[in-house]
Each structure stands twice: as structure tokens, then as C-alpha cells.
Image 1 (cartoon, rainbow over the protein chains, first blue to last red):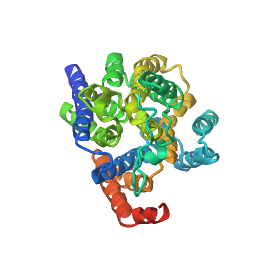
Image 2 (cartoon, each protein chain N blue to C red; image 1 turned 60 degrees about the vertical axis):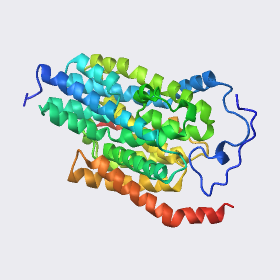
Image 3 (cartoon, rainbow over the protein chains, first blue to last red; image 1 turned 90 degrees about the vertical axis):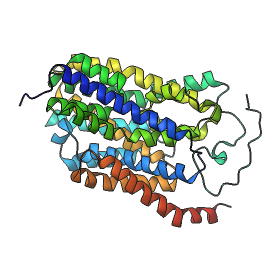
Image 4 (cartoon, one colour; image 1 turned 135 degrees about the vertical axis):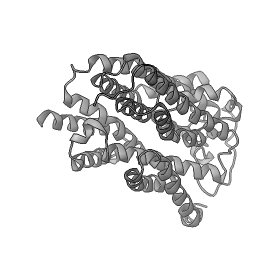
Length: 113
Length: 268
């Protein structure tokens, strides 16, 4: 199945991807100039953004592409819940210990299996 | 600067990011913009840099195992600086999609930058909201965004831009070398390490959600997390945008109808 893009095509694709991505950022700047942070539309757009970011995160965990898909889904979710518990176990959030808990335990799983 | 100014009174019925109630202790967190910049830089050097470095290492390794050009891979980190979009680009290039299809699919996954920018930049000081933002916005990725959304609440508006620049600059700068490193190391790194590298990214975003304070945004996160995979199974490319608009709008309406009034009653 070696149908990969060859020659100039791959560079055109890169250029298109870069331009498309920057265009989204630039449109954001353009629109943000007209918006006040106390306005209703600001609150609505913030809610949309959080929903998008959450959707992307959950998708990366539950429906991942590539290597992570080889790990059983219950294990991925279980480790996330465990890290989450470590994070909120203290009032001043413990981000790095929580990150290490989940990551190191998954690496241990990868080492055993 | 304006550090000596008494906190202005603002009769807001609910908290918004940057509410005076949150940073109205009358004392500026940073003495000047330079200090704000380096504070952002130092904050980036912890978990955010670790997460991005791991993600880009994994991305570089993924490209190498699929025999994709090194420059193609590393330039995408430098010029796109959006890992989910880069993964889509790589996958579609490997499977031989057309240039137009790749451009459209990547742009659709990047639409989140539109709303991310609209949610972040209005919090900057009016003086900083000028054309230079068209350059600064390139440093915006989910990592820097999540940290900025959290920290901006405790930073005076005139120092926010420089905090963000310090944070974003380090995050962006490490991605190019990290991608090259991942590319060159691929094959030498055992599978279990790669597993950790790809898991740390979504885990970081998940954990930063615990720092979100407003009820409306918490609701949006929960709804987005539930609806996201459902829409993804229906249509892959447009799922993020549709989930965002549906879940975000529902959260906004629920907040407006019910939650906001309750907040107003509770906090005089």
C-alpha cells in the first residue's frame, strides 16, 4: 500500500496545511479585535472553545490513532481517572505528579506486555 | 506602572476571566513586562515543555517509521505548530490523499484556533491589541492556551501579553529540535517509551480542565467530552467544529437560563 504522495505533491500539501492553519489563527485575531471580554458573545465563544478542546482530548484518549490504540480502552480510561484523582487530591493542583502517574504506569504496562 | 492604582470597583454579577474580584488585591503580580515575559518562560519550562517535547518526539518517530522526509516533518512543526493537524497531514500524506483534501482536512482540525484566539486575546490590554498580534498568534497552541487561560486571571491586563509571549516562545522553539530528535532516534527507542510519549499529550489537556473555574466552561467541557466521540464516529473531519458549536451553545444556554441567576443570588 505504498501510495504515499510523491514529489512536489507532498510539499504542496505541507504549504496548504500551513496556510490553512495560519489562516484560522489570523481569522481569530481579526474577530477578537471586535469582541469585548465582558460581552455575551465572548462567553459563548469561550464555551465553544472549551467544548472543542474537550472533544479533541477525549477523542485522543478513547479513539486514538496509532500505537495508543494497542492499549485496552479500559486501561486508558482507568489511568486517566487515576491521574485525575492525583491532580485534585490537594487544593494546590499537582500537575507534574499527576502527569507522571499516568505516563509511567502506562509505560510499565508497555514494558510488561 | 499602574501598580499603585486602587482596584477599580466593578459590580459584575458573575465571574469572567480577568474579573477584578480575582486580581483586585491591589498589588501587581509583576513589576514590569520583562518580568512577566520571563515568568511565562519559566512556567513553560515545566509541564508544558515536557508535554510538547514528548508529543513532538513521538511525531518525529512516527514520520520516520513511515519514511517521510525529515524536512517535511520538522518544517510542519515549525510552520504549523499544531500537533493534531500535523498528525492528520502525515496520515493523509502516507495514504496518498489529494493535496486539496489534505488542505481542507487540516484546516478543519485547525478551526479551533479561531475560537481559541477569540477567547484569549480580548483579555489582553487594549494597548496590546494591535497588528503585532498577527505574529504573536503563531505561538498559540493548545498547551500555551490552556496555561494562559488559567494564569491570565491572576495577571494584570497590561502584563498578560508578555507572559503569553514568554510561554509561547519557549513552547514553539523546542518543537523543531524535538521533532528532529524524534526522527533521528526512531528505531532506537523501545515501544514502551513511545507509548508514554503519545499518552502524555491528551493526559495534560485532561488535567488542565480541573483548573477551569467558570460553571459555563465546565459544562461545555463535559458536554464536549461526551458528544465529541459520537460526532467523530459520524464524520471525522468536521466533528470538532460541530461538537464545539453544539456543546458550547447548549452550555451557554443552560448557563444563561439557570446557572447565572443562581450565582447572582448567592454572591451579593
